[in-house]
Image 1 (cartoon, helix red, strand yellow):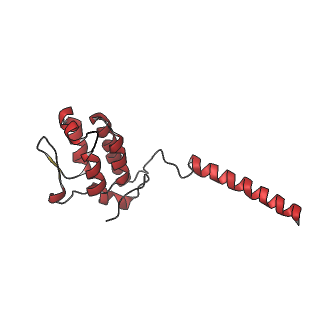
Image 2: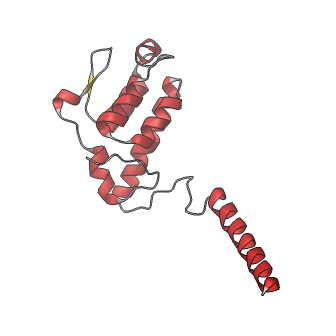
Length: 143
């Protein structure tokens, strides 16, 4: 299976991320519940107590991030969960991704803060054009 590492998703990505995992890959929460997809993870994060969250997210590990990255294979969400140090932040990250996928599935374009023309791209484009003109001017003076 291909890992989903992009922020802008296409319809074919939805089935890879939203489907239930096989029973042996379900996430077993410390409070006794098993999770088999992102929607269930969002629901569990919303209602679990902070002690349960802290059991799975410590300074040294983040079970939710690892499961999403390794089993669901949504690397981008896995990174977002790694940054989420509270249950609320983790819930928000998963809920945002689930909503993004639902909108995409229903035919709406998924909006994200990532744009095709990022700042780095534009800076590189401008520098390339300036350097191209400078090199062209130098060559024309030498000829």
